[in-house]
Length: 142
Image (cartoon, rainbow, N blue to C red; front, side, top):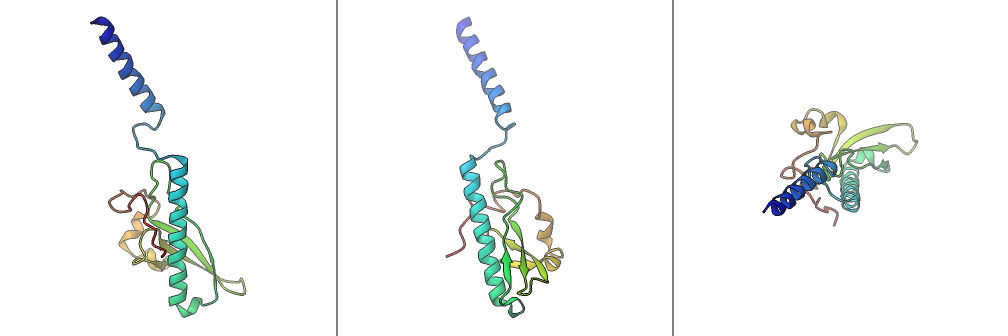
């Protein structure tokens, strides 16, 4: 009986110790899963930026400098749902910052100044729950 109790105690101690080393109780995704989520976020943001540029004649012919969601980590692979991109004019003399959704084609992009006035601007830079920004991220580019 003492041996069984000792084995259970060792197993519990090992589980608790290993759990605290491997992520402090938070769920983590693998490096490969995080890289896939980052790639999807970047592709979604670029897809939205291309649509925004196409729909806005002011930015016709401008280049897009793409970025991903800087809040994505192995404990938050869904990130905050936003990426900051820049439109660069043909003369390379003017840049416009835009925020593009990494999960919603319907939300698309907003110029940074307009984005800051919206309620979801408070989400920027903060890991969002998966019920708000799903994981795995949907691929919105068709």
